[in-house]
Amino acid sequence: MQLWNEYEGRIVADQFPLKKLLEPEGRSAFFATTNGSGAPAVIRLIEAHFDEPEILARWSEVAKVDQPNLIKLKKFGQTTLDETALLYAVMEPSDASLADILKERPLTTQETTQLATSLVPAIEALHAGNLVHEHIEPAHVLAVGEIIKLRSDCVREAPEGAEAVEARARDVRDLSTLLLRALTLQNRLSPGTTLPAPFQEIVTNGLSGAWGLPQIAAVLAPVALPKQPVASISAPASPKTTIISESIAYKPLSTIPASEPTLRITTPLAVSDEDQPRRVLPWTTIAAALILALFIGWHFLHKAPAPIPNLATMPAGSSQSASTVAAATAPTPSNATTSTEPNAVAATQASGPRTQWRVVAYTYNHQNQAQDKVAQILSKHPALNPEVFAPKGHAPYLVTVGGSMDHEAAMAFRRKARSEGLPRDTYAQNFPADAR
Image (cartoon, rainbow, N blue to C red; front, top):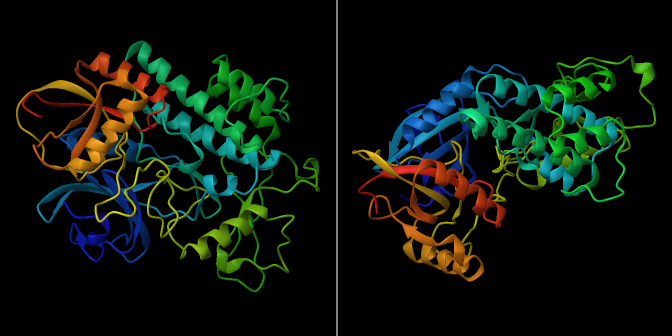
């Protein structure tokens, strides 16, 4: 296949123009597009590696989950560009990413409350639909207008039995880690660290596994923020802001300390230094500056990962995602980690029975790049047994670890690889017996 930026200007499915490349992400890439009726949208392309049915099935299930704090998948399907089979998903655009905000400062207690009361119902809705997220991190928390949303194109089906229980528990631990990071910019709860109520309880019990989503939601309900008027983008002369959180129980406005700023966001064109003091709108100011500086791209409160990311929300003009391993100075395409979800793009589906599971950490379009990455992994983690695997006998070249194995062993080895420092979006996939 071509470099992702060489697809700019092409049209997918006869209705979605590929405008600016927003973020390459290994097997996949995100482009600015329109939704068929002229409204702005984001489209993700994935080169399929024999997994088209699985990815499309996941997206189909995600599209059934109607929850306001999840990025909406508007349309998805299969297409071909230059004899390369691709999957595509069209989704609503976002404005900025939480990852970008946390590069500047931590969130306040009220901002973190809004964050939590937005994400908890989104994760609950996924779990109710027999789905798990497994990528709850700042780059995948996005803002669409005044609403905080979670990237949804990267979820997967929940496994069965005890493994399903553990997968849901990981989502809760990841949420707890996200809230901790939002407050402290740290990923670990250090001894002696005291968090503001109710997050000391939420983070401590969420990380330990003592609490699930119902307990966290119950503690959050009494401290939810009051609802505020919605801003009108069409009235720039007197811009207003809106609180991002929805679908929560609200306290009377009088009970919220006036001195503590609330988490707000506005469109960059509506920001006024005179009407919106920085004391009240710190996140808005930062998001606006980031969006303008990065060509008003596909941002969110919210980046991605991706991402969207990062869905990772992705800053416009960015050349690689947080999880992408890029050959930035070479004439070859950047490489990145692939994901355990609908993160990667299409290739033609192979015929024949699937009998070998492999754990995939990286994807390259050039064999020498894949071999270099194998050498790097061998030098640090020889027990992972990395190797170059080309399912079609030519590009794409996958860097896999652990060799060929059954499904249960692959799931366990994926966890081992992640624990030893390989990317979080390392995934396991079943390949035809004759794939090499």
